[in-house]
Length: 166
Image 1 (cartoon, rainbow, N blue to C red):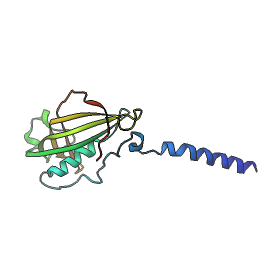
Image 2: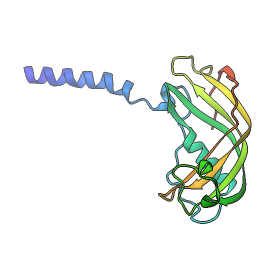
Image 3: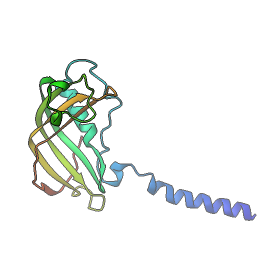
């Protein structure tokens, strides 16, 4: 009888603790889930399309950082011409880029959301508009694309905003 009571007690404990810890990031931050990329290996030659670059930027930027969920929306990207890695001064060579890679300048815009778990749903994000973002896309030595851009915006954005819908 004692074994059954201990087992039932453990079962009750497990059912009350697990759901709280099993929350997804989206549930915890009252938002959608951060985007992820199954693969970042396309294209295998040439520059990524603007849509691919936007997808890679989104996947690399979104996620939990410093007790906030960072999300982006309205990502727009233009791809510039490429420069060979070895043609760049060493100070301008991106770390992790494959030595035979082309480095593509990019520019565009996006909105960055920093969402708090402790704020009320629908008013838990700070939104910063980044209308003049610049950056680069390149293939790493592992064959994955890295695309990143920012506009150095030091504005704190608008608080008490809802998270992005998509």
